[in-house]
Length: 277
Image (cartoon, rainbow, N blue to C red):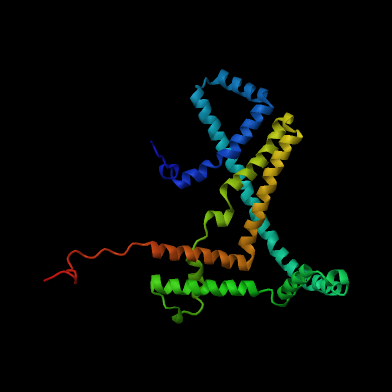
């Protein structure tokens, strides 16, 4: 029985690029089903001017699908970048609203019996009070753990004595441990799904027959799921505690590489101490 592993037969980078075909093919198939006359007229004009074989037509269709899909995936990347800029003022606004007026409002509600008898309400108020008292605690704890792991890895793997450094240690900490593509952009299929949703909305401009509630609901579902992923991606890129946690995960992967590395083979010219004379 043939056992073929596609991940080994095809390079991972090639699979990443081929993901752009998903929204591109969704765009083309949607237009083909919604407005076949548009495709037929352009294809007839092309065949009249330059006769093309079916295989060449298929190659051109795949190439156009890749171009369109890649363009909409770049559009999703732009949305993630814009959300990163919106997250920074949001973090400041949430911190200020937590102190005033959310915490005083919760303290005032404790005077009422309905809220005073609710355990979940007290748990929620305690979490808000702790966050308002020390909002930088999650960031400080995560950053301390990150620095300890990075310091130990720099000393063990590279033999760098950080006691001799002053401000140069921070670039060294940032240089070890790289976040994965999933941590940086989210799952690739989720990005392709959101791009497919935007492609579907764009296809309705060329094929008005697609503007029914079922097709639009499917496109909006893809877009909403993708925007949810974009929200958490922007949060991981901007929140200080999330950034430190991401670096910790990257450092733990570096430790796994050291544990999984094979020991160096012994030089055959050097006699083994266990061997006899």
